Image (cartoon, rainbow, N blue to C red; front, side, top):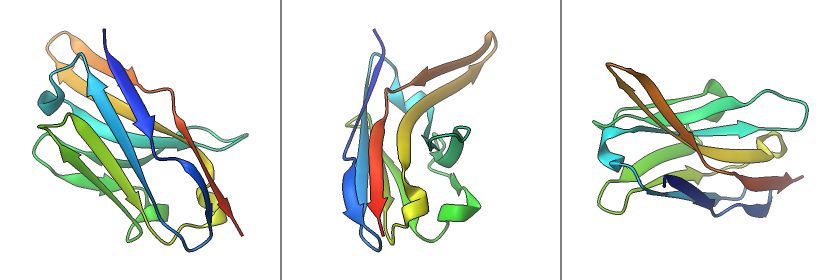
Length: 119
């Protein structure tokens, strides 16, 4: 059974930092592109950052320079270090695992962790 379990969310003041973690079980972690998405009330889910199997990264423009995604294949865990947080970063943050193969794309989601940034 595949599980992606996020942790590290919480309440933080603007300008503060949080580190999110996502532990994966049931998949060959190193073969998946891992991503963090977020969804604020009334908004669509959006990509925050992603990291490839080779360690390449990409970010939403709104978080570039403030957030860093990383992965530890030995621990089957992906992280999102969030610095200089702003109230507009408030959202549910979701972990995503994706792998493209000959039979199509396999995608898994975590249940999310809430990040609240107060002004």
